[in-house]
Length: 110
Image (cartoon, rainbow, N blue to C red; front, side, top):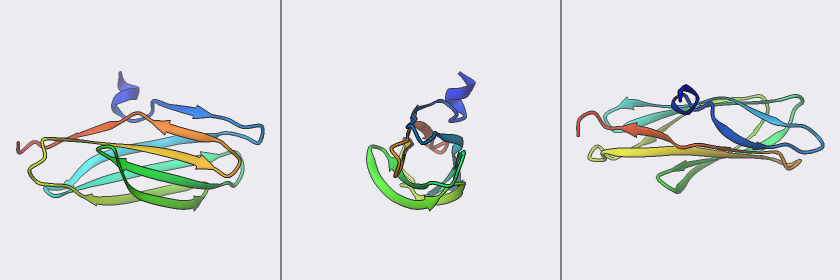
C-alpha cells in the first residue's frame, strides 16, 4: 500500500536496449490553486524520453528530456475541486515505456 501512496508502483516495458526506472513520482498541493508534480526517471545509459503528464484524464504537458530526468512542474488547479488525479506515461525512442498509477490530490478546503 505504501508503494501506491508514494507513487513507486508502476508498469514498465523493457526493450533489448535497456529499461527506464521511475525513481520518483509525487504530487503535492503547492498553494490553494496549484499542485506541484515531481518526476525523476533514470536509465542505465542516456536516452531521449517523452514524459506525458495527465491530469483528470487529460494530457496537460509534454516534456522532452534526456535521462537522467529530474523535474518539477506546477499546475494550476481549480480551487473548487474536491479531488483530482495525476499520472504519467514515459516512452523512450528505443521502445521502453512506463505507465504510473494515478496519484490523487484532495482539496482539504472542500
